Image 1 (cartoon, one colour):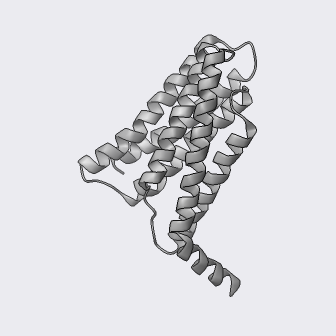
Image 2: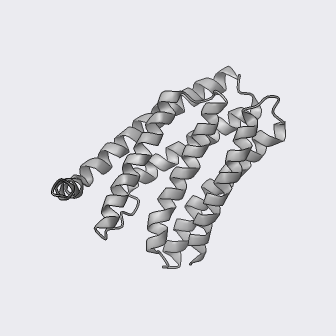
Length: 193
C-alpha cells in the first residue's frame, strides 16, 4: 500500500467520526464545538482527496486500489455528510436522494466493469461533481457551525444545492452514456442465465 492509498483509507475512517459528530448535531442542544469539529474534519478529509491523487501522480505510484477506492471514499464522505445535514434540516430530501441514487448507480457501473476486469478511473466530469458536492457540504457544515437560521447563508446553500444537483445528475447521465455498451453486454449475459 502506498501513502496515497493510506490517505484514502484515512478519509474513510474520518467519515465514521464525522457521522458520529453529525448525529450529535441532530439532537439539540448542540455543543458549538461539535459542529466546528465536524466542519474541520470534513475539510481535512476533502483535502486528502486532492492530496492522495496529487501525490500518486507526482510520485508515479497510481494504483488500481486508488483508482477504485478513492472515488468510493469520496462517495462515502459526501453521502454521510449530506445525510447528516439532512438530519439537521439543512438539505432537502430530494437532493440527498438524488445524490445517493447517482452514487449507487455509478458504483453499480464500476462493479459491472470490475467483473470484466476494467477499472473505471474517475473522469473529469466525476471530479467536477465531487468538487461541487464537497463545496456544498462545506457550506452546509459552515452554516451549521455559524447559524443554521441565517437567511443569506440559507439562500447561498440553496443555490449550491441546485447547482450541485444539476452537475450530479449530468455526470450520472454522462457515465451511463459512456458505459452503455458495457452495461448492455452485461445485461445480455445476465439474460442468458
